[in-house]
Length: 238
Image 1 (cartoon, rainbow, N blue to C red):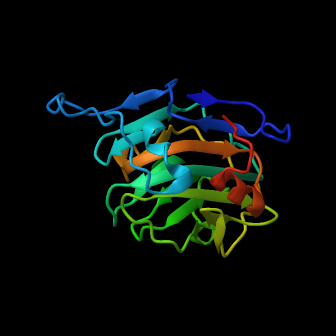
Image 2 (cartoon, one colour):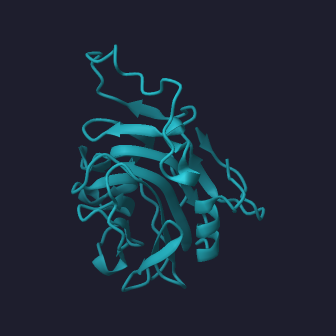
């Protein structure tokens, strides 16, 4: 479900994808071979992480191979933006792979904007470029927490021409980019995707695991708001 509207303080925040219903194209290479065992909910649910007890029931489970959600070319949340925030709940199936959570980025045709991912070192990372035709690795920022398999994490990336780029995990600031983006993000025309990175028509960095509540905000949210959103104190956007 894609929703555009205003956040708790009345400012238009951008977009959120909650996966309780779909208004985007969902790609699943399912061939029907496990139809008798595919149901994942049988009326019971084991609570293992307190506040995140119900997330799996309303998340999308990506298979790490050919599942992804296409947002097409209509994502304009960060076109011309000088600040912003991207957030998501993530539970991985395995470690050591690069999992693109949401991306609007294709370096093969100079359409760089952002790629929000868990990297091969199992850390939350935000790749963001204000100049779509040039790459500056000093703009990127990664966290320090190593994401374990089967555990829910709340990851947040922020960018700002004033305060730089930052990564938060479970409400805690874990990293700040070496170099602040110099100006507003360029408008890009490539497809945006959840669960995969598209490069020159080739799909890579497929997410293997569950993703819930992908959010895009038009402003860089402060640290206290990340902790409140993560642990339930901040008003819900959806």
